[in-house]
Image (cartoon, rainbow, N blue to C red; front, side, top):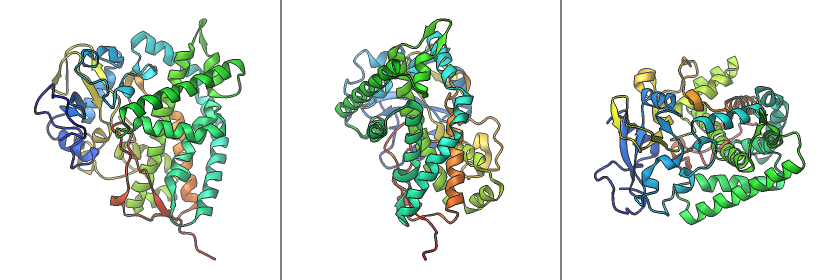
Length: 415
């Protein structure tokens, strides 16, 4: 049964996503055994296809801006009354930002963003990121055994970094974190989701207008100034870019760090190898495969009838790409697909996507995560979970999934 009351099924007898008695990953793995791409019913009686194998996901990503589009205007069901106005996921699906633009519009906007979000700008952030990490770890140590690593470290670090990038005042950062968390949770009531979306966009509009008047040395100011042959981002486009980075970029790094801590606690041999050989970059890549922060992407829509991994998908269908299930696909990674192994071959990984929508923030996410994990275990080499892994609560979202709480023991001898 679905999580929400049904509004009249548009397609009967579809598997529910998620199943009431399973977690999201278990549901997706079970569905993957049915077919590479499976039609399911989302809460609210809304049908969509899920791509669940590595091969199917890669085919879809390669077809972005051609066979698969992101603008919700290409999903007839969203506009013909089939989907209720109060559908909980409508605020995420409706878009109005870089990830929901297609073809020429997407290429133009991505090109302008890329001019401000350069590798040099990201690399220049390393000293400041390290300084933030060190300060947060001071607070973790001061809190002592039982400290929850999520609010004090894995959540705090990405928010501080992205706010540094945006030029957001310190007093506004907690509000941004609360808004993004509420927007992504499928348990958030629809009216609260819409209010949250409006509050977040209003704040970002104010931030952009301030940087237009008083530019500084930050990414928002860089985006304001970015040009391409006289073209530049409009205010609405700027707000859309910042919104996407907050919702899709920040949240994923929070969960990447949380998943890594859990995986290393459960695999002490891999933790020992990472410490001995300074293989924190490999830890980041393997975490993205083993427990990707993105359970499922927001929907793509088929521009035409298409066959993916042998499965027919009609034109106008909604399709979700399930990174977590594809990352542990034994057809791609063998019988050890469900094992965390930082020595695993990395060729062909989909951790940051593939094709024309490859994650533009990948260099920042890699840098931030590598520095964070290396510093955490260098400062606290005996760190351990203070909770059974089966008792860790995970975020209630179809899109980004990770630990909401990670109580830890620091392993520091008391005087």
